[in-house]
Length: 364
Image 1: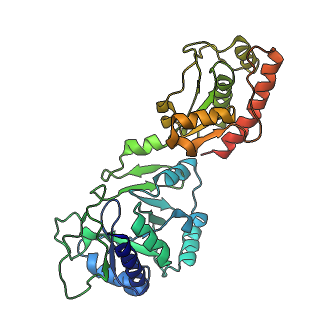
Image 2: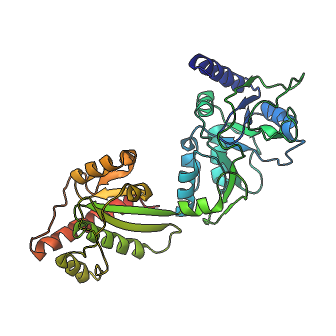
């Protein structure tokens, strides 16, 4: 599509959805048959798909999660993290919800009575496709979709990853078909079901595997200073202790440290080790490491002791700008190397306050 075609087709798709017509839109997984959540469009969608999709459930397709974010109950760190990491993307997330929350969502979106079944779940997709997200956002009405391969327009063995299988029909033809070529993944989205207690299951099909989901429940926090013998090792030690005291949340946090100008393999400075020992913490096994782009890439968030360190990290990995922050936006954690042990104690006190604030901000 050129720019003019894109704008024209988006306008047509938005108008068609609002008029209660059926439209075919691309996603990153398969093409979908979309309809507004109203009685007449839903009846059309059922008529098109019921012979191949016995499920009575519909998947809400949203331009972004913010549309229903405030009404969703996500009481566990696991649920909050998985939803935030999986959407937008090739995932269909089925969330268990209290009935009151489903009613609040129904009221906000104007869903028909009885839209949600008796199992108290809501199925959501936020497709990672720019055209379809624009259509859904501009339509301004709740929309649902079923995969194109479930429609009676196409051959039974057609996976629905292109629109080539749509033939000419005299009834229930789509009002609009946006053809963006073969889909990126070429396979249907993965269904992940998440309970209110945080337990989840991953369907054995689609581009997201169970190992991928488990990896999302692990995060790395990286602290960076200059030589990786004083400030960042103390920060690593303090942060690890604070996280351990929180108890299990279902999220595994790995804390690491590195430096931008390092004598590789050096132990922590004696005074840093002493100050940590005074707090019941152990730096005896620490060995300094030079910061690498791979470390930055693995980290979910990077905290530096100064703004200069942050600039150095971002110059080493420009794509990581979004996740690199000074440990304090206002204060600088000065290097205590070569100074008295009292300065080290002051630095440790400073770090404890800053880290406690940062960990609260990134709580899972």
